[in-house]
Image 1: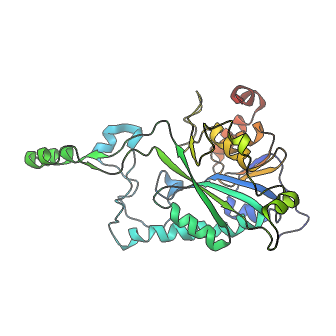
Image 2: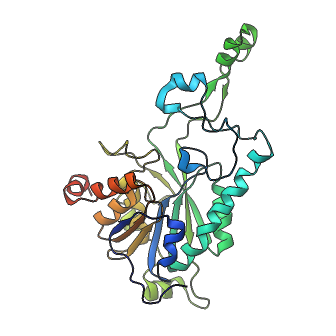
Image 3: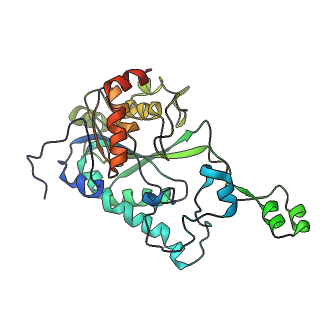
Length: 310
């Protein structure tokens, strides 16, 4: 049970598992949850959110070893190799369900939960949050300025087998996906009180509408497609790091200065840095001590003065 006298953390990065830590936050205390959640696709060990013990998962092939760090770990074919593989989407839904209800509880009515989710399993997170009580508002598209193309050439596979005829016949074909330039951003809202309007909710809780003029400072047009790259020296801190300006755009879209932004999966802290630059109160949870340290360093005043280009 939540203690009604619990004090909301203020401008902190906290080394805790968010699934349990968020239970200590008061009801209706956060204006925005903005988080790059694990996608469940095996990017790193922390991104394996199922109990499948197939030894091929996160392994590597000779081709991957040759490609280097850009393609260092093996996932699995999307169709699955076994019944256990096909359970991965269901287990991702169950993992999202562990925290979705707590997210709903701590948000203010009308508040937004905006998450980055993978194209493969994002629909499972949508279902989990909807089942917890969220309204699914929209899918935004972040268009990356660059992305690795990891699809292996089918002809090369046949060449290694010594099958020159098949290699010639299937030249130009690849195994895998197209270059992942598009990344979905899922936008949810906590329902507001029955019998009121969004306009009423804005007056009562300070959230529910969106700030188009502020958002326009980051985009060419107020569309649901965002084109945003990285500033110099803003990469390499985390395998799934997001640009600070991208997080700023989403924070300004949905909140006002002085309001509270929560990132339950803080990673290297891009959401927290963006919130601080925009004079929002920030709360971050991150279980990995190495990333907590990076967050603390990025939140230092001297670094923020360098990154503040807005």
